[in-house]
Image (cartoon, rainbow, N blue to C red; front, top):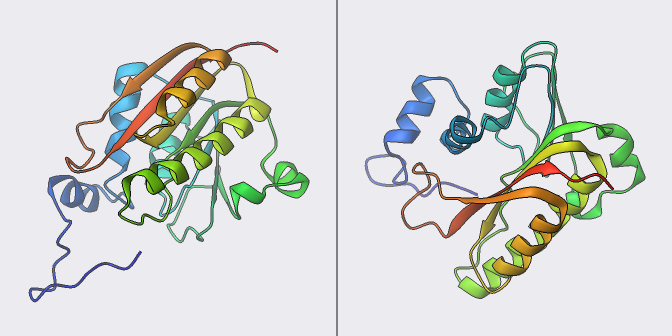
Amino acid sequence: MKRRSSKSGKNRWADHFTRKAKKEKYAARSVYKLQEIQSKNNVIRKGDRVLDLGCAPGSWLQYAAELVGGKGQVVGIDLKEVTENLPPHVKTHTGDLLEAGGEMMTLIGRDYHAVLSDMAPSTTGHKETDSARSYILCESALLLAKEVLVPGGVFICKIFQGPDFEAFIKQVREEFSKCKIFKPQSSRKASKEIFVIGLGRKKE
């Protein structure tokens, strides 16, 4: 998505978190959403394997890499190529999650302790259309999480609130011991996004 230019040449969406991310050398302000989730739930630990869906531009990859340390592993998937300079224990793949087949599964592997999804659809400005598209992405993320998470694993997923929200919550509750709903303070005030956190992946 291209940034709109202003007469001053500044990003009109820039705020405190944007400036903080730049100062702390994170790829995007979205890192602080994951930091808030981590501080309240301790979802990622040293040595964990983490899968980040919709990982570009890479701020969640950067933060997850810090949390798991050199003995852990972070893998990211996105339609866009990640150009950030990342540590050796982070790998990224360019591809479409909705079309993920056997080849993608071979690339990413299994036995993850956490699956993260900050994916969002291309927005139209029509609330119901955008929330429906978000729900499709969330369902895809959950299906993949069910395939690759170890028992006891964690699932974190962004969704746009809409008619399908309760249905998605129900699906997460069926697969995880606990389900939490969380709105980070670092989310933009106008945003309809909310995060669903599934804790304790149930055994098959």
